[in-house]
Length: 240
Image 1 (cartoon, rainbow, N blue to C red):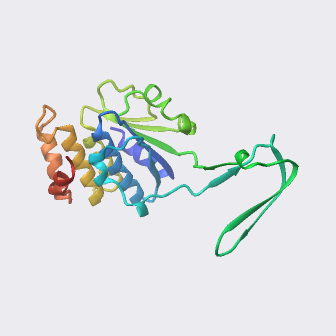
Image 2 (spheres, helix red, strand yellow):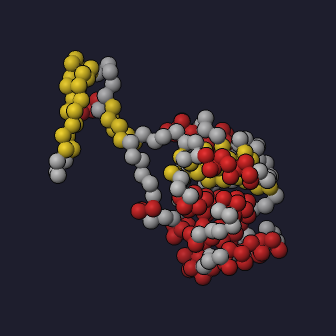
Image 3 (cartoon, rainbow, N blue to C red):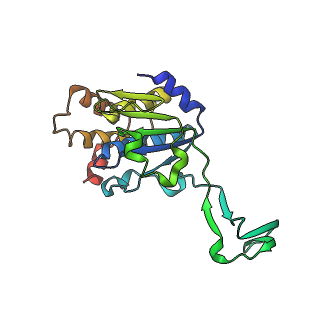
């Protein structure tokens, strides 16, 4: 697989969005979280887009102080409503006040909108998505700026449209592909949060090592993750 090219495009990216397939695919979500922790450790600004987070995976989510929130807050007034000629602010211990000098028109409370402005991502990483436009275009209407960014597509090979600039698709689980990527990014080392996420991904992929997806390679991967700090008992206690 194209790990060298993948390592380079991730190295050059500062703002990264991760989008896992949500519909009955907890493995993709667990793998996405493992990438989130790894990329944060590498100093990247990372966001995950998940609309409906599974209750049984919430024990894997980061604490609030680990999440980087948007830093650009925008106050918007349409030009057709009023012409603003001057802006200044005053700040004290109690509040920040923004003053606008209106040249023409009248500004009412309902005319003013507020929102966070996110930087356009340098890279989008999808996990378990078969066809980016068909599956995500409607879902990402409010994130239209995402649709033109370069994509790293991670998935098993079955029915995948290979829509990415780089396609890490293989006849393996998403977890195994993600683990190989993380080992390439981190020179073989992997943090505790990531290995717990990946072992959870394997458990969901194999139905707790009971379905036809179980192979010798799967057991070898599970053993590797546990040797590197994955806590099987903690996962079993939390993942129902």
